[in-house]
Image (cartoon, rainbow, N blue to C red):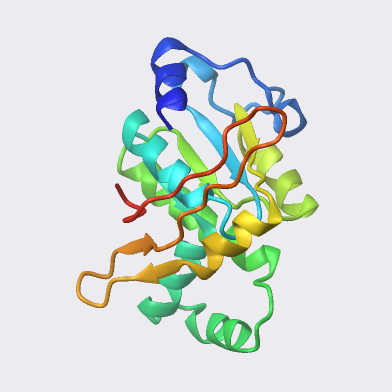
Length: 194
């Protein structure tokens, strides 16, 4: 994380690496100089998308938008999609692109009304259709696909805990797996929010 922090502080703007998601030809896309960063973090569950996204969002002053959080919020709000989402989640099905796009559009509109600029999307898009829709809505400056070795991922997922008193997330896993090609291994402490 320290290396990412140094890179962000040192770099005034990232080269647009996400040309596959770029939509500079769209007239409704905000010019880069008039907005904050718009990044996407992808990867399998447990890889660290939320951890890195939330830390970078705090550092950069942009909202962290995770579609899973949007679904959980809608479920708890008894909103118009609540019963439909409840049925989908209880059956273990994936939430449709249409519902996810509706929740994301609502969240982005609320943020814009509050004066938010930029974002880091966590785990979105997850389908080609979602990527195409996102491309039609805005420019994405950077896409990060986080990967981790399977044994480390398994240990991280099994080590997840939630504090029964404060509700904070932490991880009991201590992963010291030797990296490949001289790269460092992975080390995790708890709590995850620190």
